[in-house]
Length: 129
Image (tube, rainbow, N blue to C red; front, side, top):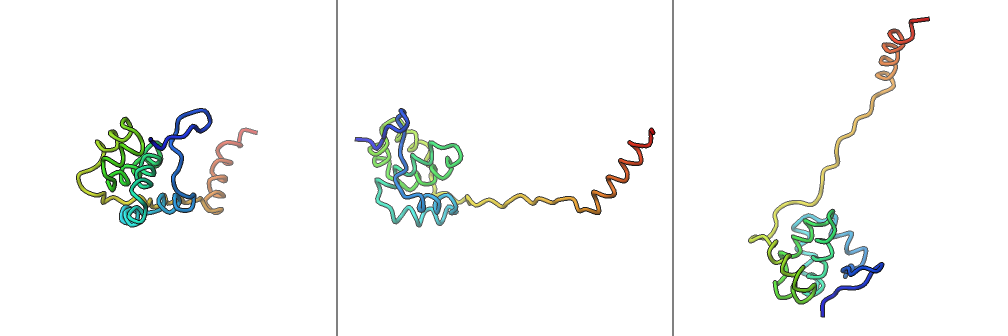
């Protein structure tokens, strides 16, 4: 029997781990994901791989988790269609990329910059009185 539930009227894989553990996986890099996954039973690891893969924003995490699962477990736990898909996507070597992202640097204009822009615009734009 595959681990597929009816959620909101659709067949969907429910998250097999707690929200806290899912949050740790999402924030982890590939090495940490492997450590977390090693502590999970094979069946839970397979279901978590499928759960993540089916969400576009967690797809790479799902692929990384699938690479740590046995093909037979993926097929047994999530069904032959999705299980075979995950087996085909497994890289030949464990993932080396990092899931942590460097936040984009954002700079804001200072009040001094805004004042000089305002002075320039005011002189050009509002002199038609």
